[in-house]
Length: 278
Image (cartoon, rainbow, N blue to C red; front, side, top):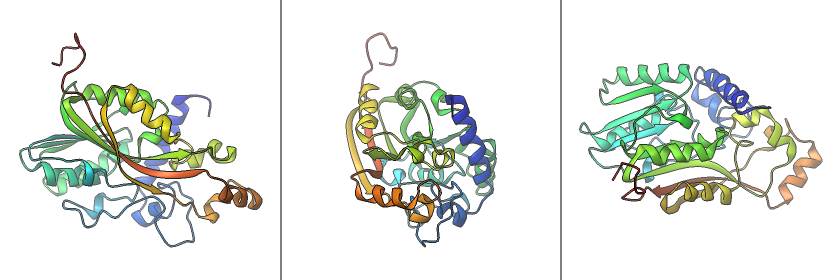
């Protein structure tokens, strides 16, 4: 991959295919990357089924956490979901905002937008909308959202600093986000980092945990907190697509870790002088 645009095109193509797959196929691979595992468990995703507002039709099994569970959404809030897919987190958020709130899902894959809109219309959700757009340039005005959520999406974006800058712009002063994402501790083997399929499957697009948290701080956020963290275990039959047997054995023995984290951070109550938002 030689450019950010090529990476974006790859992800758009892959997630267009994923939109047409069933949940079981997606959950058996790394964020739907297509590398089905013979081991019977979900690699990344957490169980949404007990959350109020859950809709099975909108759950493609692509997440790596439950950001809406930790997002402190209140009735009447405006919530934005970045990388909204088929609408799962949006519908959970709607159950928390109530009829007086509003939920906006942003996704840059047309097939996902279409699927999410169909899911919303089927349930007569008039205060949930889906907009096609790039989360590096969120199609929402400044200082609009009370809460922003995202689930296993920012790791797919080349310009993560740009996304956090956009999140800061779109949040109201005092607003906050809760984002679930994949991060690394230590360096992955080169074959994994370079594999396009694994990029679309969330792993090789991930960055170091320390760097990820630093980007949030550099964007101007405060009260940065890791709300949940879990190690991700990739089965050997998926790793074997990218590594030789001896490389897998060596990988298991080193301190490299792949983690799902859910991170909370707040935009300060007043922006910088001259910004026009105070």
